[in-house]
Amino acid sequence: MHVGLWCIQGSGHLYPMGALGRELMARGHEVTCFQDLRARGMLKAAGVRWAPIGTAAPWRPHAGEFATPGLMLHQAKCVLDEGTTAAKAAGVDAFVVDQCDLAAGSVADRLGLPFVNVSFFPPVFLDDSTPPHTVGWGSGDGRHARRRNRGANRALVRAVGGVIQLVNRQRAAWNLPPHNSLNDFFSSRAIVAQLPECLELPRPRPPHLYYTGPFLDGRGRHHVWFPWEALDGRPIVYATLGTVRNRAVEVFHTIAAACSVLPVQLILSLGGFFEPNELPTLPGSPIVVQYAPQLELLSAASICITHAGLNTTLEALTHGVPLVAVPITDDQPGVAARIRRARVGRVVPLRRLTVDRLTAAVDALLSDRRYREAAGRVRAHIAAANGLTRAADIIEVVVRS
Picture 1 (cartoon, one colour):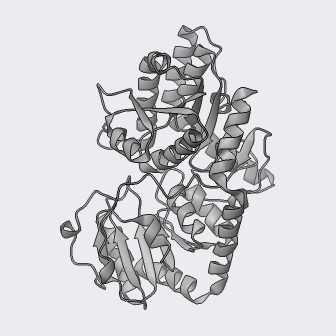
Picture 2 (cartoon, rainbow, N blue to C red; picture 1 turned 90 degrees about the vertical axis):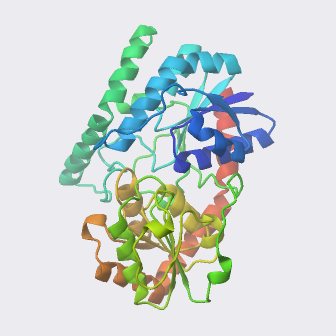
Picture 3 (cartoon, rainbow, N blue to C red; picture 1 turned 30 degrees about the vertical axis):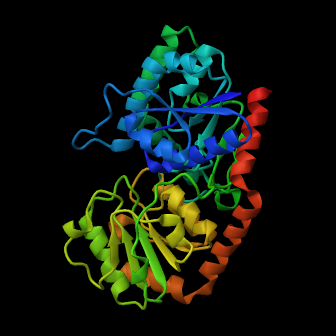
């Protein structure tokens, strides 16, 4: 079987998709990932074949643009314009599609090929009993909770309304029936989420929604230099705001100031948008790097301060590391809600972030062993679930059925 992988840009999508591609390749399948030139190096490091789409006009956000819907719209245009030809040329037999790519499933429908969705954030299957991943509150059973969830679901649909309209116009041109709800854009065969079920909010579970655990094999990443000799034996606090929305210098300063009054050593990863020497002097003399060897550092860390991106969250919990979540946007409020509910960390929303609040959150994780114990239980669940193997098992079965 030749599997085509379709996902949007960003390490939070390409890393787990690359791991899934490697697992399918290890089972004897051909795998090709369709992306633009920016993904070529990352896919090469992942060991996954790259096929170009969207190379003529790479996406660049306009000033003030809410980046993720803009990126999703760009992805949809590229996939609808070039995906059919690219998939035919590659000779793929089935699609594995990121839930952020709302167009590739329609290309599969046009070609008469099966497709499966994978979710690199809390899975999307809208229901008024469950809030979407874009908000930070938990589940509720009452009328007010359902009304609030319904409003949040509608807001999510509005945010991607341009993508929905574009895809439905193209479906009409291809003589395919329209998608009447956001749920219609997703596979009826399987939605495979790397979120462990033990972290999910209470919700109705459709029979084709699977929780497997992280798609993580510890391979397929560029080597990253790090000054290991600078570690001094104090408990390590590893802090990262990811590689997408981490341009706020004041947030880095707040993190450094909060940790400077505690008996810890802070390692701060800037995610590529700054050189360490571009920052002002930070309190406490933390180790500051442009990029960090995240998996290696998490294996030694006591606490992770994170934007609550799902990849970093799952990588920390795979190592049993409790978290302080500072959610900023996209799925991060929803991931933070799951961190709070599972009691594997504390949440300090960006709008309420102060040195004192962050210091209190880090100190609570250091002094209260219940957070580490809860993180350890999630680590055991992740290890037992073997998410990558389980995800590949599901894909193999459902695309052949």
